[in-house]
Length: 378
Image (tube, rainbow, N blue to C red; front, side):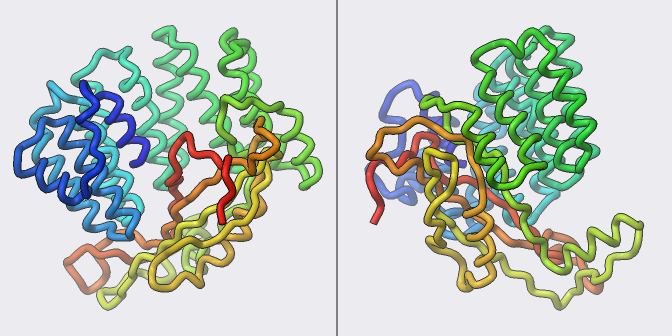
């Protein structure tokens, strides 16, 4: 959502549209009361919802964005980008809150709003081409994600959009690699590298990162360090994640995944008496110029954060691409939100949907795109 707010700010016609200097709650309330134009309303609503989300008030953030959508969806034809941004922000919060139906619906509205009201070659429409596949991936439906990415690739090739076609192919590469299909990933990677667009210097870093991810899965730590150094250092790009240990599933999530492989019944279906509160933490850490992480720590979280101890180890073992920096810089500081939550469903013995089932992890980068660590943090 942070990126959405700043993207919307850049669309503003005059600097005074950017919300600053006043409490977000006051700015938001004033905007609603005065009937702000769609862009200003979207900026205020997303910024206020982001603050609520950061504070762990997921339901309040969803309600803020829902009300903003209700006020502005009739302006989709004249202001498609702000309206689409509201849907995208609502989708993000719904995913972390565990409401996958709302997440799926919001992504669909986000894409439709742009496609129905902007030219097909508009950058916003092109960027949204991947939203559906990314949605399926977030819902752990790899087959549907593959179909969606392949459709984007096919359409982009037909339209002569070589860059989007390459990006779609590389998403398919990462998907194949994630499911352990190393042969399929290598074949798709070879197809991508054989295209003329792959020689474009602007795409060099993207291709190198994907190659590195494929190679890193088969290497030990020393070899991974060597591969990271081989990619070179470019001060104009942000560190890209190359390798990380897998996240540890909860016992129930692991049992359910095994049951699904054999089409077995859910080993522990949700019941009407279940109570499943959200658990969340914000973890801050440095990414050093050599691509290693340093000083991961839990900055804040929900009432209990003891469950998140293993995440510090996961972050500490990550490897990112290296980057250029001065001798006095520590690197780049990043903060990520980790949410452990169940999914909304109607449990046995009830007619009301609530969060339940196996708790699963969602991760979101909360750091501004240009945040760096040129000054030491105490």
